Amino acid sequence: MASLTDKKVAIITAASQGMGAACASLLATRGYQVVLMARSETTLQLAKALGGKGMQGSVTDAADLARLVDLAMTSYGRVDAVVNSTGHAASGELLALSDDAWHAALDLLLLNVVRMSRLVTPIFERQGGGAMVNISTYGAKEPTPGYPISSAIRAALSSFTKLYATRYAAQGIRMNNVLPGFIDTFPVDEATCAMIPMARAGRVEEIAETVAFLLSSGSGYITGQDILVEGGLARGI
Image (cartoon, rainbow, N blue to C red; front, side, top):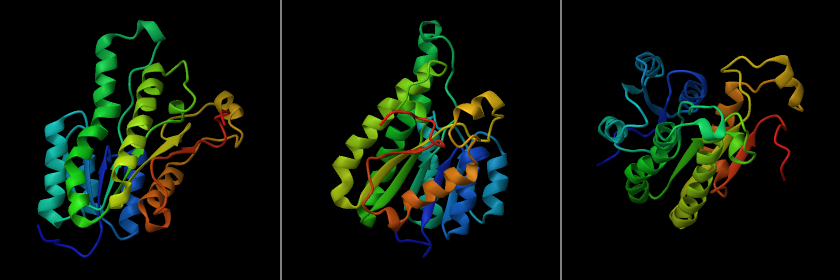
């Protein structure tokens, strides 16, 4: 399919609020045509405001992901960038979490990226390149007992990202992860802030700026990496 726009096209999931919406807004200001998906109809309003396209759907539904990529291709004829943003997995005591909770998180946090990769990689190959950024969590590097499912499955996402990056790097196709710490999408209490060397929560705009950099030509030699954006919270080397 011939390109229907001279602009780069970015797909962003979970884009109705928080980090996803911040990424969509920033990328639109950087000259991207944005194609957004979220379960909330708010994403339709945001897409319209940003001059892009939007649809309601879930990252856990393979058919919705396929419809999203099809929306981008029929609307603009190309996909240059993907931001895989998601919701949150169930939390709780390590061995008290059910099999259903683990399986649901697998769809939400890992298979969403695997399925999106299957859909857009052939497009990237035809176009001669492309970039994906997955919004993960610092727990992928430093597992936190309060979020065992997220920590474990997002560590698996880091492994998938490294495998994907190695496989497709020579074709100019890149994938990286952004690992936020405590971000202002939710209230962060004083005790938590006291644990963070920067003594504050991160801002969604700071996540969006990191994502935009990782999608840009300025990061053209960066792939397969986990980029911590957590105010110095993680202590590991």
